[in-house]
Amino acid sequence: MKAYLLLEDGSIYTGISMGKCGTAIGEVVFNTGMTGYQEVLTDPSYYGQIVTMTYPLIGNYGINNEDFQSTKPQVRGFIVRESCEIPDNFRAQYNLDEYLKMNEIVGIEGIDTRALTKILREKGTMKGMITDNLIDLDYKKCLINQYNESDHVRNVMTKKIYHIPAKGPKIAVIDYGTKKNILENLKIRNADITVFPSTTTYKQILQMNPDGVLLSNGPGDPKDVDYGIETVKNLIGKLPIFGICLGHQILALAFGGDTCKLKYGHRGSNHPVKDLKSGRTFITAQNHGYTVIPESLPEDVEITHININDGTVEGIRHKKLPVFSVQFHPEASPGPNDMLFLFDEFIKMVKEGISCIKR
Ligand SMILES: NC(=O)CC[C@H](N)C(=O)O
Image (cartoon, rainbow, N blue to C red; front, side, top):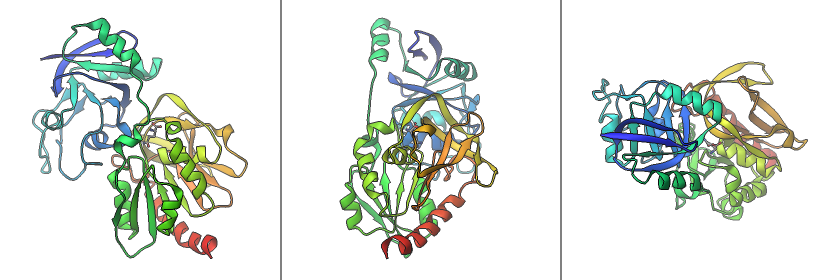
């Protein structure tokens, strides 16, 4: 069955329906990873977005039950050049089309996703719609133009506080839409984890008497999460803090800095990031559309990492307090593991931070 991709600029691309037949609206963004589509589909940071994979063959190792980053696909829609019907991998449980159908995600295949990516790079990310018919086209165009969702975080965060007990330091995770692998990396390091909804107040978090706080990744514009910025403002100086992606942006805003939207963002598994202290470059996994404005940061916050491709801020650290954050994803999933050691640094900082702050 035919399906269509309509973009905000009026362009129409014809393909074949994949996953659920129907209509989906969202921000159309591209990811350049050759693999990792399963983690992309289930990463809550993509909530509200229609993702196109630049690499032309997607689904060739199928979908398994272990690599999910949350309980269900979070993307609004999915665009591929070719969806592999018969995956070849011992872990494969479903093919891509089956998985999208099971979870009622609208998709389209047969689109030249590399050409589409070039357009999004030139014009910037655009709002768009996948639909299985062109009836009422003017109305559909109108819907695309009017599409304006905000604060996606409330849709993906945990609604209830939950605890994952262990013998190590007590870590409070503020959940803006955390990926499973962030929690896994804390678990591996024996952290006693309590996950809080992003709407939790700083007083409630302090009541649990944590040793450190992790600010998770999540979808949308960090400025929509004003309640979260307020919470973090009140935690700075009281506990060691580590922010990842949206957590990094929220931390920068809590410091009094500012953020803005990038033209087409960074989404993929091979973004080079330079550690300004060591001069070393690491290859990182990324998935973000917003960035911290370097000039907006106060005197006592330094930039620790930059993106080699465009010079944007990739990491910040408070000069005196045990507080740091990164724009990229050290937990990878999908992507390289070069930066996993940041979780060790965080745990080390938490252990030292307990003595330097609390006592
Ligand atoms: N992965 C993330 O946490 C994404 C952060 C934010 N939603 C952005 O797009 O910039």
